[in-house]
Length: 207
Image 1: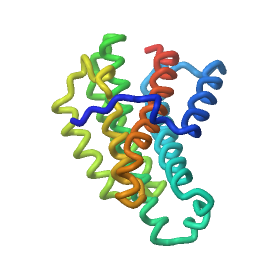
Image 2: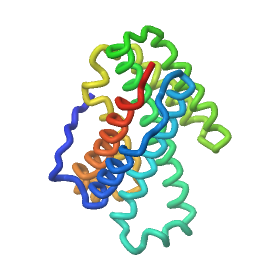
Image 3: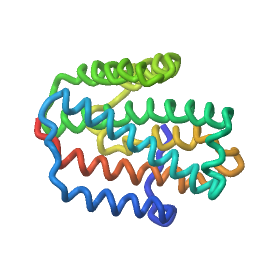
């Protein structure tokens, strides 16, 4: 798997503002994560947040004042929808694997098979939100493959969110020659958001 480390020099001003705002919100008391249902909710909502913020901020930054006009373009909207669901599917995988790896090491949680059940349940629930079935099936296949090779003892601290960062770079509906120029910024944008989620999880988890 390709490794990529965060570099603060390649972070955009908008991303830095989001980071500071999230850090401010961290002082607001939140409900602790004490069971699997609450963990499932955390994985789903935070994966969706990271996907939406990184994808839409990148598009807005690249397109500038033309950003809103593209929402009347059916071809663009179709590409955006495909990108959103593909990135989200990988974000879900990363956060699910991260949380269960963290639980195993730091809370001696042994029922790792629950990770597959939670992941599948979240995907099934997304059908009602029109997540494409082919993306759901591919996500389940990829998740099962990743589980076979994962080292649960180190995953949570071994650049666990690289796949979703690379997925953002792959699927964002931006011309390839432009994405190549933006590569560091795109990857760092998502890694920075995940850093916020990691810190939040570590404060809230009480299994």
